[in-house]
Length: 226
Image 1 (cartoon, rainbow, N blue to C red):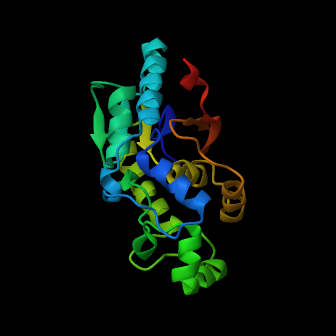
Image 2 (cartoon, rainbow, N blue to C red):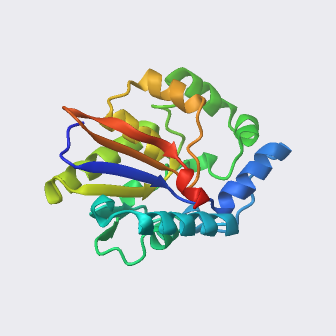
């Protein structure tokens, strides 16, 4: 995808309570993830608050010329709170629903074990269609998320050409930006995703390289030690 930004960065939101509870449920072999809030309202964990504050210290130490000109944030609470602590009172911060996390539909709040037990037909469908195109009932495929991200980048390109753009979003956002900006093929993207975890509060960034973008930082977390 060709857009005209001087730099593009993506911060995955800092650790949320859902990250903690979900990891515990997966490790315990539970079928469900016990969360009281809807996905959009999940807050940061205590560790996540520390990570977001570390981002704020890191940005504060950078030359202003290296700051993003525009910050576009997912409307989910965990992303908004990450952006608020990382770049407090940034003069141009936009909340846009196209950066939200992938919607899982009937698979929401289920572990991998839970999906296999309760929706075995969906496991078969995903195996046949592939993760990129499989859309669970009531949810989204990766392709659906890519389409809304493509729309967002096009709109922002028309409004802010040549500017430094920072998105604050989710793990799937970081992966699909590689598909859009670097033109990574579906097969290669899925192989990459199987062996990678995008850490909470990590920074992934790209710089212009001809008609596409080159990866600058791959899920960097050094700033969290500041």
